[in-house]
Amino acid sequence: MEVVDKAKLPYIYSTDELISMFLAAYGREEARGSEAEPAFVRQKRLEIRRIVTSGKTLAATLREMALRMPFLDKLHPFYRELVDVVFGAQSYKHVVAKVGNAYVAIRAIAKEAITVVRTAPDKKGILEARRIYKARIIDLLNDLKPELDKMREIVLFLRKLPAIDPNLFTIVVAGAPNVGKSSFVRCVSTAKPEVAEYPFTTKQIHLGHIVLRGDKVQVIDTPGLLDRPLSERNQIERQAILALKHLAGAILFIVDPTPHSGYSLDTQLNLWREIRESFPAPAVAVLNKVDIATEEEVKKARELFSPIAEMSTANCQGTKAVVDYILNKYYVPQALEKLRATARR
Ligand SMILES: Nc1nc2c(ncn2[C@@H]2O[C@H](COP(=O)(O)OP(=O)(O)OP(=O)(O)O)[C@@H](O)[C@H]2O)c(=O)[nH]1
Ligand SMILES: [Mg+2]
Image (tube, rainbow, N blue to C red; front, side, top):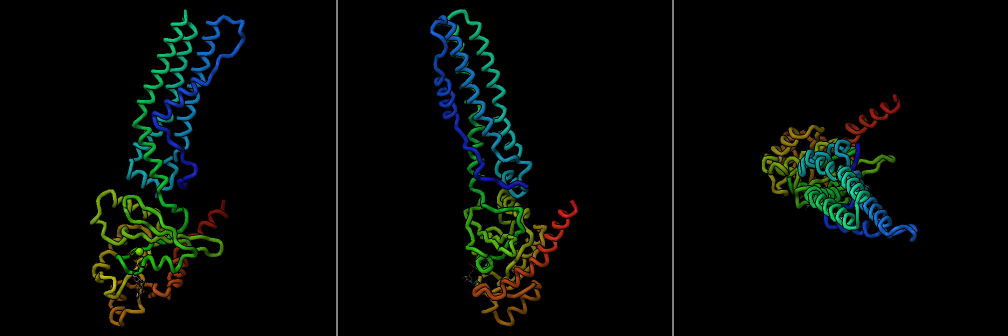
C-alpha cells in the first residue's frame, strides 16, 4: 500500500500564476513563415499557433498537478483516514478531478477559437476571437480558484505529515503522562528518534526505529495522544488518534506504579481499558520505574495490569527484553506468514 511520497507531490500554481503562465505562453509565439505571404494569412496562422501553444501549456500544467496528487484509494489506510478527517475523501477526489479535467474544457475553448480565427473575414475578426479566447480561459481559471486553493492546502498538509511508514511493523507506546514513554523509545531505538508533527495537535510524535537482522520495525511515542481518555477529545482529534490503529502492530502500555508521575493507578487503569477497547492491535502492559518503586507498589500494579515485564527506562534496564517479547510474540509470526505467502506465489 502506498505511502505519501513527499518528493513527488506537485507544486500547486495559483490562479494568478496560471493566468501569467497562460499569457506568457501565448505571447511567446512569434510570426514565422514567408514574407511573401499576405499579412492577413500570416496573422491568422500566428494567432492559431498562439492559441494552440497557450492552451496546451495550460492544460498540461493542470493535468500534471492532478496526476501527481496521491491516489486516495491506493493510499495506506492510515494516511487515507487522516486525509479524510481533514478534507473529506469526497471533497479530495472532487478537487483533484476538477483540476485534472479542466483540460477538456480548455481544449474545447481553443478549438472553437481556432475555428473563429480561420473563418474571420478581416483583422478585426481575428482580434475579437483572441479577446474572447483569452477571456474564456481566464474565466475558467478564476472558476478553478476554490479547487486550486484547496489543493494547495492539501499538499501543504501532506508535506507536513510525519514520515511514518505504515508498512513497517509498529510498536505504539501508550501510557499516562510522565510514565517514561519517551525514555523507552530512546532506550530501544537504534538511532536518535526523529520528531514529527502529528495532525491536530501542537504536540509532536517521536519516531524511533529498531533494526534487527536487516529488518526494521518502528516504535512511536505519541505524547499527548494516547495519554488521556478519548472522551476528552473533540471529534476530529479523536478520529486522528484512531487513525493510529492502522499502524499498531502492537501497543505497549507503560505503567508507573509509583506516585512519581502524578497519575494514580486507577486513572492509569481506566486509560489502559480504554486503549484496549479502542484499538484492535494486541496490547501489553509493562511496569516502569522499578528502580524507585516499593515492593508494595509493584505488587499492587501487578495485580491490576498483569504486566508482561518490569523495567526501568531511567537506565534502560529490562527494555530490550520488552521489545524481544513483543517482536517474538506479534512480529515474528506475522513476518513468517508473509514469507510463506510470498513463497506460495
Ligand atoms: N526513577 C525513574 N525515573 C524515570 C524512569 N523512566 C523515566 N523516568 C523519569 O520520569 C520522567 C518522565 O519520563 P519521560 O520518558 O519523559 O516520560 P513520558 O511518558 O514520555 O512523559 P510525557 O511525554 O510527558 O508524557 C522523567 O523525569 C524521567 O527521568 C525510571 O525508570 N525510573
Ligand atoms: Mg514523552
